[in-house]
Amino acid sequence: MKIIIFGGTKEAREIAQQLDDLGHNIVLSLAGRTSNPKRPKNIKINIGGFGGEQKLSEYFKANNFDLILDITHPYAQNISNQIVKAASLSNKKLMRFKRQIWQKSTAIDWQDFNSIEQAIKQLPVKAIAFITTGHKHLELLQTRPDCKFIVRLIEKPKTTLDSNCSIIISKPPYDFEQEISLMKNHNITHLISKNSGSNQTKAKIEVANKLGVDIFMIQRPKLAPAKEFYSFEELKDIILV
Image 1 (tube, rainbow, N blue to C red):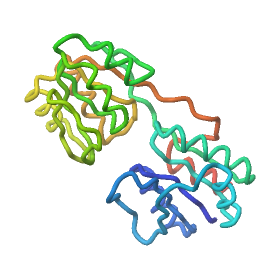
Image 2 (spheres, rainbow, N blue to C red; image 1 turned 45 degrees about the vertical axis):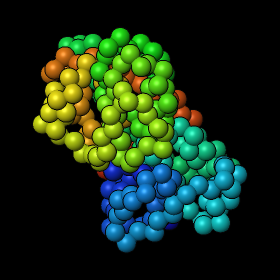
Image 3 (cartoon, one colour; image 1 turned 120 degrees about the vertical axis):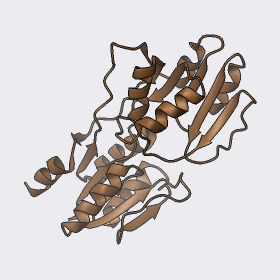
Image 4 (cartoon, rainbow, N blue to C red; image 1 turned 90 degrees about the horizontal axis):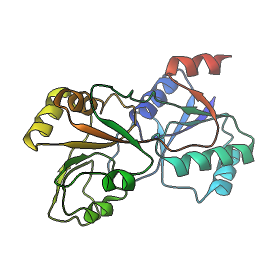
């Protein structure tokens, strides 16, 4: 089969490699937000956008893809919805990988929010918050000069942050010892996170639970409906049917 995978996640790289090993013709499409992304071996890479769902649908048809796989980040709402529309316009089969969410613990103060803005507004005065939500909306931190922020990113931000913000540049995976050292050293009182469900970043949730750090969790956005799968084994069974 000729398959295009929309990626940018660890699972996308792994599934692309596994499908390639099975003899499928794979194209891996990346948004291009990370300057030096990890790439699976011997697989064609497409970097950058397509110009909307109409042009994307034309690309699907012109390249005769048999299957479209959306394995983007759970919070990549815009591209996921574009993929659904483009697949429909081009009459192509689409499947979306879905990570399981992290489950709320009753042992800690875990509050759910619909947006980063809501979470930041609810921080108490003098909170020391560990921010792991990515580059978007960092300007909102400037609305809370009464708090301190430790912001972890994969690459340096384009947004200029105030003096109450410290930046940590690093890439996952993060283990339990790394996270407990970070949270203890910075006296973290609150963790603001997206519920990505990634095993590579789950340790921060476990450490927050151990240290009694309050969790402000940003809920996943609603995506346009698509057939979903949860593992490579499940996908493989469906493809073989």
